[in-house]
Amino acid sequence: MMLTVISPPGEAALPLAEAKAFLRIGHDGEDTLVADLTDGATVRLEEATGLALVSRTLRASWTHWPSALSRRGIALRPGPVTALSGIRILDAEGDESDVTGRFGLEAGRLCLKPVNWAPAIPAGGRAEADFEAGFGTAADVPGDLVQALKLILLEAYRRNGDVALPEEARAIIAARREVRL
Image (cartoon, rainbow, N blue to C red; front, side, top):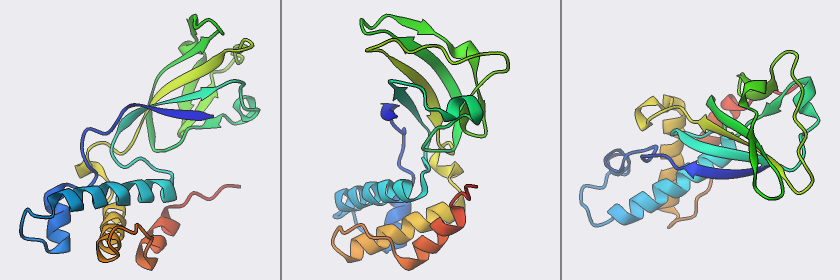
């Protein structure tokens, strides 16, 4: 699966003023540094959790359907997936067919609706699914993830940009990790 960002988040998961307050910075001289470190900390946290903090539109692409589609559906990542915008099949020339009606979204998984089958992906073609992922705005991000983000930011600030996962942040991430059977 290949993942493409169609529209990035409209805001930072941790506003600059809140990040500066947490770091106890009372001047504007390090705004660029703090913003860059916050972006890096956000990427690190999202990678570690498999979650998108602030909503964005993404596109997943496949050259063939994963075998899990017919059994339990395809997990769309990052989560939480909140909406399915559209699904299409493109042939080698780029002509597309909308097949959105055959699919549904169940607990963040792309699933075939009952009595439907996966449409064939032609040689040289691909399937694309556009979806929304994230908790919403920065104000909607759960408090435990905001705390983990702040801890990662603090560590990066202390280490001159090295975005490591402090032990406290790892504990929060571990509590969020999905159990797969």
